[in-house]
Picture (tube, rainbow, N blue to C red):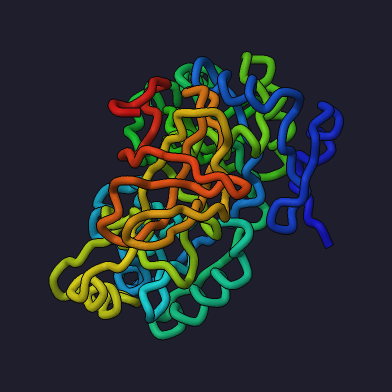
Length: 366
């Protein structure tokens, strides 16, 4: 059965083109995917991300549990509301999922995990939590709307109760706080996102989601689909679970070394495997590629290098650059003479550092 978010009927009313996304009926675009991409880079757009899974953890040993569960160190979260991005690994060091964790209290943390991995994530978290006497509670009654772009924060803040505005205006990156929205609706506002632009991800009771979406539209925030979200996050150098990493890929191999905290005395799941791979030499790495001639880099295409074959992971036309870019996994040490097999034609590509776009502009060397 395809699942629907609380905003589904509104998307259809707005004329969205709907697709199946990980078992959810979701809008890919409301007209022009390219225009939706540009509106987020230049102004403000909103995405229905209510298919994401919210899990609240409660228990005296919740922090100890997360020190064991996550590859990044939850000890970095010292102030209520702060957030951390991390991978959750299996014993082999492969990525079960990537997620965001929020510190909400001494014994209360909130996880936001991917939609397509919901069942396996919940099963894994609940299994691991038992030993720590931590309760993991899914919160399906919440909806989630991401508002992204250079003017996104101002447009959201304008809709808040005036008492909350100064506090939310001061909210730092990767932090969250509660606030009152239009008509007193309770909002959990996080300064996070998946586009490379500033903005907020707002978690709220689903009975208020349609009203908030309409208020945002009135404030000049454009409705955007998952198509634009995908090209935005690729330009911003952000991984997509299932395409750029999975249970057979370690964070070393997925360009996520920065999310691994090998802090002394902390034995997290997968640590031994990560340390062994690091000591032996990571066999393959994730790199950025740019195609300077016409054509589109797409998932699954072969990458040919003097060191052996690799493959395109996420690849697409990048509207901000007017050319095609991709992530690829290639043998370690492959940096030059890279070619991509596009329908039997070997096309030269340039290896570059990602992100490809920052603050709406091409990064150096792109």
